[in-house]
Length: 207
Image (cartoon, rainbow, N blue to C red; front, side, top):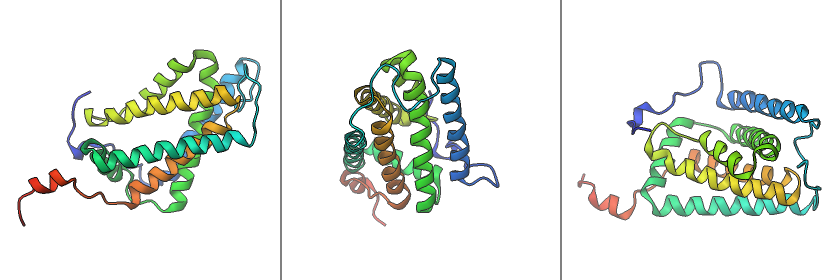
C-alpha cells in the first residue's frame, strides 16, 4: 500500500447518484447477500446468532449504544491530539463532500445494518470472530498508508461488535453501536473544520 497525494483520493459517486443513494443501494445488496448466505445454511434470519439464544431485548441496544459512544469519544480524542487522525478527518471530508443530515442518517443506517448483517449475522457464525473481523478490516483499506489507522480501528470495532453479537445473541447491540459511530462521526467530519495542532501552527510561516 503506497502513499498517494491528496488529489488521488477516491472520486465522488458517478453523476446522477447521490452518496446516500449509492450507499443504500450497495448496502441493500450486502444485506440481501447476507440473507442468502444464512438461507443456504438453513436459516435466513441474519438478526439472530444461530448458536446463542437471544436475550435482553432492551439491554442489547442500550449496551451497543454505550459501546458506540465510547468509540466516538475515542475518535474525538484522536482528532484532538494526533496529526494522523486530523489528516484522516480532512481526507474523509474531501471524499464525502457536502452532505445534509438526512443523507448522513441514511448512510449511517444503511451501512450499519448492511455491514452487521453481512459480517456479523452471516459471516461470523461460519468463520469465527477473528476471521470475520479481519475481513471486515480489509473492507476498510484506504488508498495510502495514512489510512492504515482506519483499517486497524475497523478491526478493533469489528471485534467489539462481534463480541456483542455473541454475548446478546442478536444484532440489536452491534447495529445500535455501529449506527452511533457512523452517524456521529459522519456528522462530525462533514460539519467540523479541524484546527491545527499547536506544533503544526508553530511551524507555519507567518502570513
